[in-house]
Image (cartoon, rainbow over all chains, first blue to last red; front, side, top):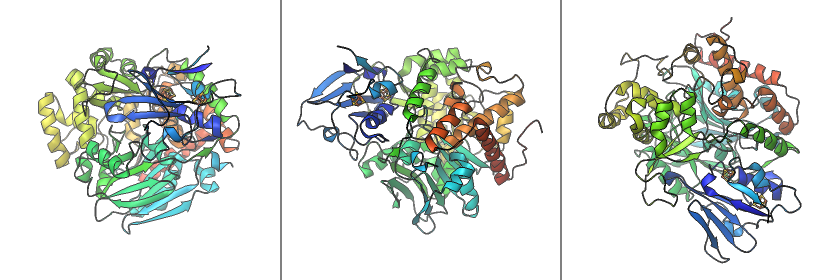
Length: 113
Length: 477
Ligand code: SF4
Ligand code: SF4
């Protein structure tokens, strides 16, 4: 099982960030989830950053990019950088992926493989 | 009551006369009596009525897993109508504010110098805003973000129109305008308040079963849309297929307010190819349309309406009144003229144009829209009819009185609880029963749809009463 991200379907509603935190921390916050929405609001450029065990997956609308560990990769200044966040465990022990459950658009889907 | 699932429990009181900030506890009694949003805003307004208060509030469901939980409310006395009015925030400001650790903000008095209120990490300060004063809305938002070093900072801000106290001023939710049809932007201007600026990284507890219940409801709601998204289907449901077709080629992506299952906003690109996927090198490729009736007001310009909206967003002007004054002017003429309009403070009444106590009539006129505007306490920027769905889907009868009463009450419930009031006109699945169930689960108290409806009626009549406007709510009476 894996998580698949198609950023061209993202509306920027942000609820996946909170759902991931809820899976790991039981509260409603964005502070330490494995997903972070990148928003360049004025240019309407939205992408998803996904912290995985060994890298960071940047789901950009024009295509994905993988950042290796150690790469300088910040979220918005002021929020906890994606590099410092716990990696995605694919919602270990849960029946569903919480971010997929929450995403209303099909931007995040569960891929069986 | 489990207040911690719904609120941080803090009200910030900012006195601009003294330049001081205080904190007050949000107590159970206030929540018992008014629940939140427009209800508690009103109670706070009445408490400080002699100090020209401007209140920013959130509902118990704002910033939660509840679908479309994006709502914030700004309450103040409208310089246009003299009434106490509630204006919804439906983009990202309310959620950002609530996560700062404050649930309500009361702004009293007037500052001598231009200031901003900066809320973050359970702290609130009055900070100099001379750098932002004199700048247009977009420049001001950029400067706020730069100053606080964070791209995700949100700001309720004003442009030239608000600074000059224009009767056509509107406050803006970051770059993209707002539902302010009541000139509350001018109230901010009077206060020398350039912006309420926030960055929220707090957290709330979540009641057991709440997440699952919200997901269930969201999945039910999603079945209603059949892949529809953005402003084009909204225009079609207003009977404007042709206009929808004209603007469609400019849509880059459709964007949602916080946690909204329906993306009710569309980003229009006219200075860049709207098919671009990579980040554009163009600094200002277009603008986000968040105010559907504001766009409709400029329908006469065809697809160029969006360029007019960008200009208006920057100046911090209210689009429907502006469009009435612009009449049938061409885009170029109108673009030149609105600059002057923002400076001069002309208004509809003095120009002899149609208005309801100074507020422009809805661009989509109907008997129920007129009744709603006569009551005049909730923003008429939210269309006075169901969107995508039909009156029948909501079980509303044919008479204008019934329609108006339904709209006002449905808006009230949204404004009190924290659900986006535009979304509540899109989805019949957001019933008062569902909302009451979510609240009962979250707050750990028994609340029925009957309780919610009764509270909505109370907030409506007390708001009218507070503004001492001679309108009797309850048209049947
Ligand atoms: S799969 Fe689970 S852990 Fe991974 S990003 Fe989604 S919610 Fe977070
Ligand atoms: S939940 Fe889905 S649509 Fe919303 S921000 Fe996350 S990925 Fe985008």
